Structure formats: C-alpha cells, structure tokens
Image 1 (cartoon, rainbow, N blue to C red):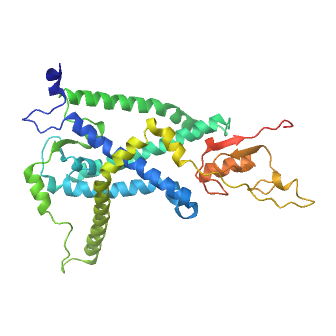
Image 2: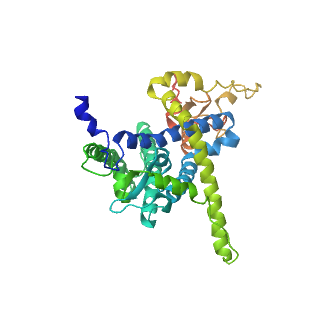
Image 3: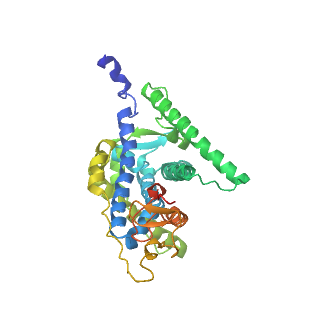
Length: 350
C-alpha cells in the first residue's frame, strides 16, 4: 500500500516539481512567525503599556510593512519568498523558466508581493471586524440601519461563506497537485502566474556571485543616487530581518507547538495578568460613600456598573464600552483589553 501511494507525495525524477510535503512545509513556516511575534509584543505591551502599547495596537500594520520589505528583497534577489528560499525553491513563470538571480518579471514580481503580504493582512483585519461585530450583536447594540450599514452587515454575513469557498478551492488545488493534475498547489501562485521549482546548482552559484546592492557612479543624477541609497537601505533592513528569521526559525516552530491548543491551559497559567492592587479611597465625611461609585472616565456617579476583567476596575457601561472599543486597553492600567472582557454587575436593588 505504501509503495503504491509513494508516487503521490514525491516528485518524479525527471520533473522539477517539489513534493507536496515541501510546499506545505514552506507554507506553514511564515504562519508560525506572526503568532510568535504577536506574543512577544503582547508581553512588552503588558510590561510597559505607555512605551510599547502602540506596538500592540498597530501590530498588523507594522508587521505587513516589515513583511513586504522582506518578501520584496527575496523576490528581487532569489525569485522566491523567504520561506520558499529557505526550502531551496524558486518561482518561475508558468510558461517560461528563468534563472533565479535574474528575478521575476515585473508583473509577476508585484503580483507575488501583493498576494504574499496584503492578502493575509486583509484577511486578519476582516476577521477582527467580524469578531467585533459579533461582540456588538452579543451586547444587543443596534446602530441606525442606513443603506451603507445594511451593505456592511450583508458583507459580514457573507464573509464566512466566502472563506469556506476559498478553503475548498485551496483543498481541491492541493489534491490536484498531489495527483499531478496541476503545477501549482495554491490558488495564490496561480493568480500570480508562477509555479514553484527547485533551485539548481547554477542558480545557487549565480546567487552567490550576485552583488548585495547597486553601486553608485559619478555619472548618475541626484534622483538616481537617492533611489539607489533608499534601495540599499531597504535591502539592509530586509537582510537583517531574513538573518534573524533564519536563525530563529526552529525556535519559532517550537513556539508554534508551545502555544498550540494542546498547551493553552499551561500558557494561560504562566502568562495570566497579575491582579492589580485595590484602588485607594480617601474617606471623608461628605464623599466617603459616593466616591466609591464614581466612574474613573466620566467622573460622575456610575450608571449600569460594568467591571473590566483584565484590571478589576468598575466603570459606567457606556464609558468603558466606547473606550475599550476605540483603544483596546484599560484606561487606568493600560492592560490590553477587548469587549469580551466587560462584565456587567447586577445588584439586588438594580
């Protein structure tokens, strides 16, 4: 049985087509990088919200910029993304092959860059918007139903079905790739007009001889020199990122396993936020009773008391809902917070 099915996961000797294990391994490499970096940023933001809180709030934007720099560098120099180059693969045109050191054609290069960096970013933002919409529905908050809002809600309602159709397309594409019926295992490669192939000995030799950056000459104009300097600086940042990822790739794989669903209980016990100290109340004859019921945001007597689970402080429901929705943190401690951390407090007289 194993001998009969071995040809399904191994490329034929005469073909330059990677096996399904290789292409899936390089796909999973970059998916392990973002959660590891996100956890590191979360620890920094928790330890010092004033200094590192912006990294947590703008993590997706910072990550997509760094990812575009990294992928642009590798696509320009090796005709492959970072993960594809790590596994000794390159991108070639669907109808014509080209040496890796020459890079992809301009149209294929920019298609590949957009599909590698922007599609995951848009997917992440849509997932967050969908989760926020679910939280608003749970709190029974209904905004005025204008035409744009109706279109917005219709899009959010159809988005899960679009994701299901996309996942089905990916599965069918991978299944066809296993049986040798298609040259690409991913719809993103098909949309970019490229396929994956092995790096040859000539490719590796040419990449070693390729200069690390463009050279400046006295005959160039100021604009060309500035463009060369910016290109060199961007290449330096990309090289630093690629070197760091190459060194820490096995550590990132370990983090992916450590923070998997099987270890979530252990992670929560080790990384749970510390319990903040109780607030100090100044007791006086006039304000000893009302001071405790003052909302820290609006400075008025609280209405519809709601506690924030990440810090333990109590606010007006409307005040803390608006603040957490906009800033994603506690207004007093700076701890990262979301709408699901709001807990309404009910009293017998309420």
